[in-house]
Length: 57
View (tube, rainbow, N blue to C red):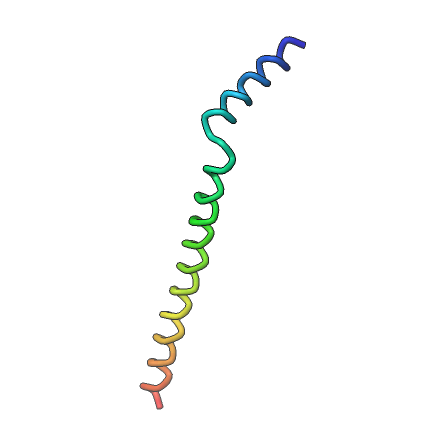
């Protein structure tokens, strides 16, 4: 029974230190970087493959 108040205090300390609103930009920026990075990779790969294909013709 003594663990619940201790856990509650730890959660409150974490919530006070890192409010939820501060995590939203981090998550969105990370997602944006992953999406754009993947898109750029496949765009470069596609253009590279098209150049190879046109060179063979």
